[in-house]
Length: 103
Image (tube, rainbow, N blue to C red; front, side, top):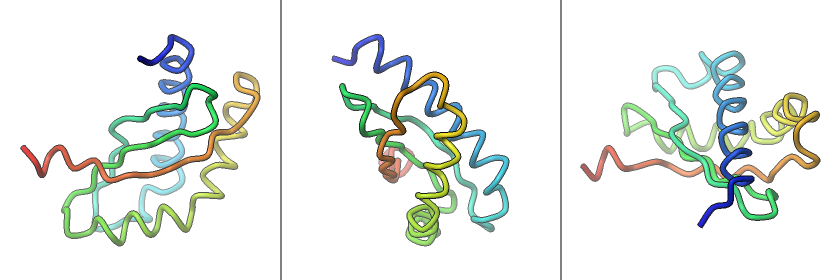
């Protein structure tokens, strides 16, 4: 069961990550359409698991590899945004959200 604190920070991280992706990486994944669908934060706020939806699904491997290559920059940008609200920047882990495929 997630605590209120975990839920609060998960919403904060997801909102800020979505803005980072939209502002700085909008054209990085063409022709794929990338959406951050959800995130889960560990109890100590040290790890944030971020779920990514990719359309068309054939681009998923390329997009996830691209995100991994940009992860340190993304973490740095997140740190700038959450610096006043959180003491640490979580270790970001990106996973494919395949709920659409399974439907």
